[in-house]
Length: 118
Image (cartoon, rainbow, N blue to C red; front, top):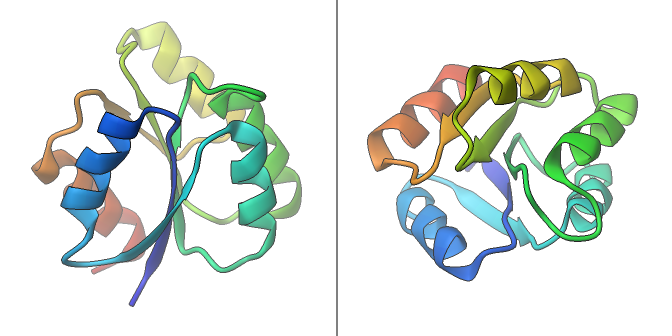
């Protein structure tokens, strides 16, 4: 089963993501950008769902750090800020895609399948 790292500091958003993922994927949580970078270093994930606003290190900085040692893992930005400028910043940081919160089950699973080829 494919494994996804969910980088999300907000408990209710994480519960929503776990509800979406639980039938189809294994998943683990990182509560900060720094924790996301550390967990990504383990190499045990097929994809990362990255919240942009997190403590210790924001999602864009975490993405840039992850790209230094893993240029190929799909990273999808998750943010409540859905402006074109936010999409551009996410792409510039190295995110493959962008989902606006609140994330719908359909849009989330569609984005995952796009990158994991299922």
